[in-house]
Length: 124
Image (cartoon, rainbow, N blue to C red; front, side, top):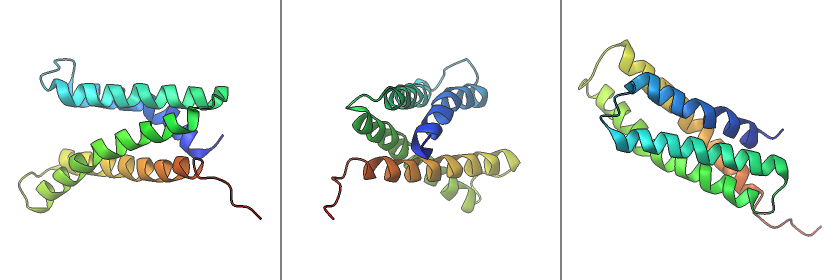
């Protein structure tokens, strides 16, 4: 199984779980919770469509990874900047930055790999 599909299954399931563990079930900040749940749902749907061989699956996969990468950009760099400016401290904040950094890298790599599938094959 290709990396971008396997990671879509893993992160599609993990994102809602991680967000729920981090914020709890109170849903005080609904927009961030919905964003992670939506990204997870799209990733799972795109991964499933890819396994089923749907014609539109490569586009669906790119859209799902682009949504996640776009959502992680301000989140990761905002937390990182806050940590570097000593506005927040503690091992919890370092852990959040590290996890978001790994998720961001995986999303960018997966987006690049999925995007390559949309390019036409070069004539030999």
